[in-house]
Image (cartoon, rainbow, N blue to C red; front, side):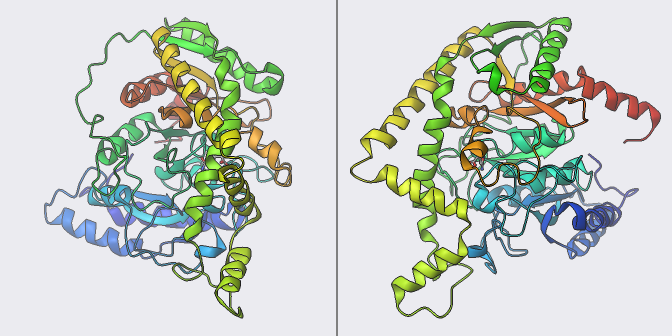
Length: 477
Ligand code: GLN
């Protein structure tokens, strides 16, 4: 990505990004807020560069945050009415680290309210549109962040991935979307969804850019006790460049759209042509992942969202008599239907009569799944599978059918339950020109090697070679 220098000003980089942001906003609704004051920060960076200062590895690089990262600039809404007008007193650790390297935040991107969803249609502010087709969904929940990169507004954006929210919209829009090992990047200052699954990650056009962002953001944080001691920055010895890839074959092939299966088949052929070994792997426990996820996730959501009471943050319903009514009205008016559904389900599965039957069983299924992944990685270096069963679907197609929407997550949630790193690699597209990404997963802490391999896989794919062609034509930098 381009960084500012004496020859290329931060002001010009930020101006261009802001112009594009405003240009695309009416059609695509990428942002909840555009930060026009970013120009002032760019001017300051330029002054420091002119004075000979080293302003960092992301000098003057414009970027955007998903609107569930707390920052001092702009309201943090998580696309939910209940947080409307909430000015955060703190800044997320990841954002602090990016800004310390000279990056400049130009806006906050749209998401499904509280990151609950797979299409960005659950946003209180309305959906984000797919970068290739305005009648289709952007994916979700980090739809705005994926589209911001796909439209070339900024070279990278932040996202969160609890059950696929980075990988799926990345796939739907033809960009890289990376979810690191659980705990790699601090969750401090990020609106909590499912604390045992939530991961901070990135969207970019290039795997090498994500590698740089990881070197900057990964590491232990005293404010997040689940953050891991830095393993990412350490020199890793990249052993044998030839890899053994496990292609997971246990998915009901009927449930996976033919165009996705075609992209997968081609990718396997390309990997073999490039000297890698591809083996078929059985992972029977994968079929329990979605059910376990949709018990564990609502349980943690019900708990995390209980803090929104109309007293402490953002929106408060007026005209209530008494405290109970204030809670009821604020939560009733402030949450989206999908938020409420999860609060209801979460409290149900945690209730004393049903805890053993649901929550405990889901926790056990999660352990079985973790063991199955461990066994799989004894047989291969990385796993390859689709990100989602379908390419980007039409706006409105699934939004009134929660189960159909949940089924879209069947391939992305297993990695979160096991805490594994995963990346959506843009490798192909459907005949109708919709992007299709494939998902590579590795053992815990294999993030760096995974990113290196993802970059290689992309370069050798149909999508990668088209881009190379554009390169030669001079249309792209
Ligand atoms: N689509 C999934 C859900 O609705 C994942 C969301 C996420 O990763 N934040 O829960």
